[in-house]
Amino acid sequence: MADLIERLAWDSEFFGVPIARADLSGASAEGLRAIEAEARAEGIACLYGSLDPSDEIAAHLVQTFGHRLVEVALTFERPAMAFTPKPSESKVRRGTPDDLPALEPAIKTLAPWSRYAADPRFGLDAARRMHEAWIERAARDTDERALYIAYDDTGITGVATFVRSPVPRVDIKGVTRPGTGAADALLVALFEWAEGGPVEAGPCAARNIAPLRYLERCEFRICRARYLFHRWLDEEPQEET
Image: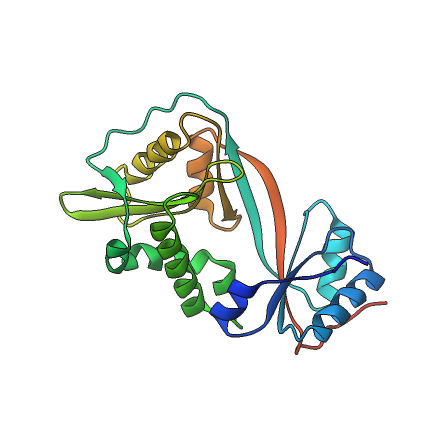
């Protein structure tokens, strides 16, 4: 019998509690009980879960089993096509670990939109630390990931991290000075990093309207949507039978 959960070593170490994840697609009451039994047997404290929003029955059922909806995550795609950025004084360069202290203002704009900030058991500080760790990882991994920084004569105007596989994707992007053209400058850097091929963006929280409108303006389209859940196993669910 295949394992129903996947233990997440990095998350467990980072947050200091045993964490695993499970695919909740097509979940039934029997299946959810089996997932929870395996998680408890493995000593898991928090279980991440996800499913497609079109699965309305499962989306309701998992919440009766104590899975807390923390984010509606949208991923966008854009085919290889021309892009004309807005005029900008912002320039872009690769970031390094030495840049990390100066990126704190950008991280503060990003952290409130994290699913970890939406879950009070983690909270805003944990979300901020997660973004710091993610950006540091991108700064140090120059093969599969990349950190890019937008700047002008006044200092840093934006930051973005890119992931190579399976499709070049911007997974974090924050602008500290709106109106400077930093967002477009970072997007051009993504296209160049992708060597002119198709790209993706996200996942992005559906409640964060500003980047959704920006991506639409830049001719991105939604390609995936997922409901993301956290299940804390020390909380009693209001199970329906």
